Image (cartoon, rainbow, N blue to C red; front, side, top):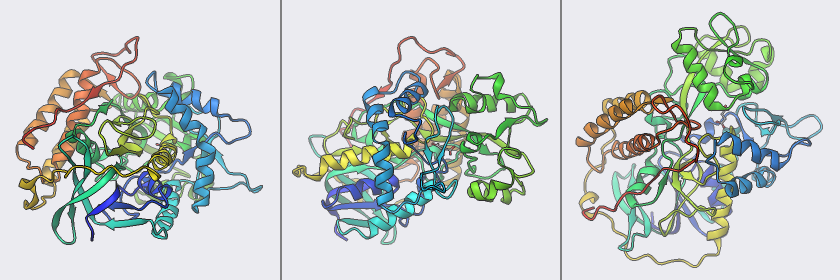
Length: 510
Ligand code: SIN
């Protein structure tokens, strides 16, 4: 294996693979910690991809829904780029082999999700859009000569040269049990989200925000790390990660109800079950805390069609001996999506030369304080294409010899201690939760500091701790409530919306 590439992509979800495909014919190497197509959040995406392509829809309407959901912090230029790219994104994915669900007349089935004013979510095999997109992109990437895929290669950090430019990554080859420096002129982070830092999440557990930690340690600007979106309807069936009950169920008319079968969302927002996600999540939490319970009732709205329309949710229910055709489903909020991340400009460039970010790890500005449902796959595709357009013809910048930290090269990799990891996850679910307070955030930071003491730089927990700390620090700095970030001690929004920005000083000793 050659530890050198012009362009290195870390991560092989939709963001990483799509960017790699669009770079054609420029050679690119993609590294992934797990076998290609396994692991990562994309295959779990149930909802689909938002695109204003219906006859009654326009990108202006999609733009205004995106701006409104983001609670004052969406970058209007980024949002315009996003929504204007919807139709081309759908067409391109179809060209790569994705089969979106069609109506009898051949038009695409368009579903509704919360806070969208039109039906605009394209689906595949009902609730399996993420898996369908992944399968197509994996096949296309494997068939592409310009892409080299290296599996079971774990990125452990970024390498920077004396000028602070990123020149590749420190990697660990799981099969060979060896660490190496991987040199690259351009490095693209496509490492996904961080729900796995929480005890209750809809994400795969390994999604622990490592890419964010790498970028922060290298000195990149991190924006709004406190904005973690909680999905209101994870199935509360004692399973980790918690299976998602997609918002598309409510889009099809399913209702949130209490234990006694009474609906409650009308007490919280005029849009009821289809209110913005943060509002629904806090309502569900309030009902659970008041011991009235929270359940999703799809019996009348979906009924017998459930297994065909929502096969993934149906399978998860079956494992818990729940039949959603006849039973109500217990639900609870769960950490689901990270809106903040590594700051990028509109072409995906971070504040560090040689470093780019795409997908959930990036903060392009399209989500603001609260992501509009199903805008994330669209973001990965639209902004992945922009990075590729930028890099496809770019002359290579030869980096100075990037520093592979000599003191780390021979230290064996140590997987995160499961007990320590669980402590962290519980501390995050308690302190950096749906509703936060100064006291609870300091408790989380204390736990993070305690766990840091026992960890070396080669431990699997180290990066998770850095990311957890970024979220808690951002949440402390944001003394207001906005979108997904709610402080019990600062319940109102400031009049002027502002970003939190964290940029670590480079540590000269490292
Ligand atoms: C869902 O299907 O409810 C999730 C979709 C999303 O998070 O965008």
